[in-house]
Image (cartoon, rainbow, N blue to C red):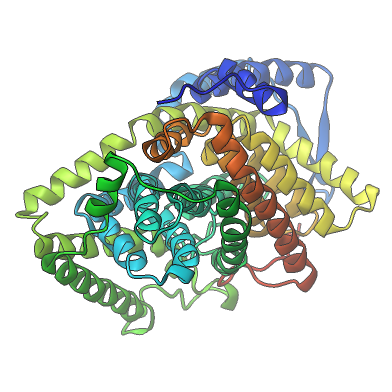
Length: 520
């Protein structure tokens, strides 16, 4: 296996700088220390702004003053409310619930079998778009797409007489570069919109997250990114790689990995589909059936579907659990109910690091709100943007580019959004942009540069997959392979955002582009 050489130039600087950064958990702790210092200085200087939506008894705007995090009240709040600060962190409940079901679907083999069935019999000409599409949809399976589909794509390409690294690159671009693109909302939507809700509540406490708030946008993104990945793979990457002749173990990988699904696996997929349809039918019944439990008949017309949207987290949990259980019983991976409990427990074990990260992020987000700095920065930032005269499409495009730059150094989507949302969400709400639109712009930037930073947690794993087929394939080789994908995905994502804003299209059911603050 070839050793990766020392990289020079900009990519080498990114690698060396990133390797010197501490763990994201400690980044949050250092940011908390910096936040404390800034809050003390801001409070000492009397920094304040008028609240954009609240008025006092005299009809004048309520003044929001910067609060020192070293005040007696905030110190007491930190220590007394620490358990509640952690457990009330919005993304935490969403992720834990969805992952309970996804853990069953992943460990029963449903996700892996579904991805193999989707791409295995694709014609040679359509192999790239099939791999890319399944890779983007595979994000519903979280880590399973990285560890199952990406190496499988290399095997499928080699079996079709194509360069296996081109298949790995196409799958990596779909899974990671198209991280936010999908046909359905999933775990990422629950994660991001939990943070979005916490940020929006800083300015409008009654604002509720809608897990399907980006559904239309991510659906469109899927079919924008699909031809981009197809073009880059077949016209740029594969010609650059040249021909490939399997040698030694690589030839055996082609034979082993191209085995068809067994009869039990096929039966399991059919039963999983039936179970999924039954769950969908159940949710339709809850929505339009007797009593309409998922519709609030007493609410305003635009808010009547709020219970339905908020139930989707539980809906995905039930869907993944039912489909995974049905598949496992047929395929033989689930023998008794104890296997289901074991799979759910293992899924929670996989979230151990996330729980530690969520503890740090929860306190940063909470303390940022206690200091009032987020609202102050948002009001001042909105005034600056408004006075600058920048058109809204350009403002959102700058947010996309900023996110893509930050992503080179902080790989976690939730960690970045926990840092950016408390400022970006309220600021753009004051300018009439909905939290859903700001979240969509963030997602474009967060996806495009995933595939070119060695700091991304799966980057070394992808390099290992490539070295199975080409032993001298190094870090620079993988980075150079993925740069064209990153550039094309970034440009196409920017164009999509600007077109979306220009046309004023809704982001999802009940999620409009524009937002109007409640009356004072």
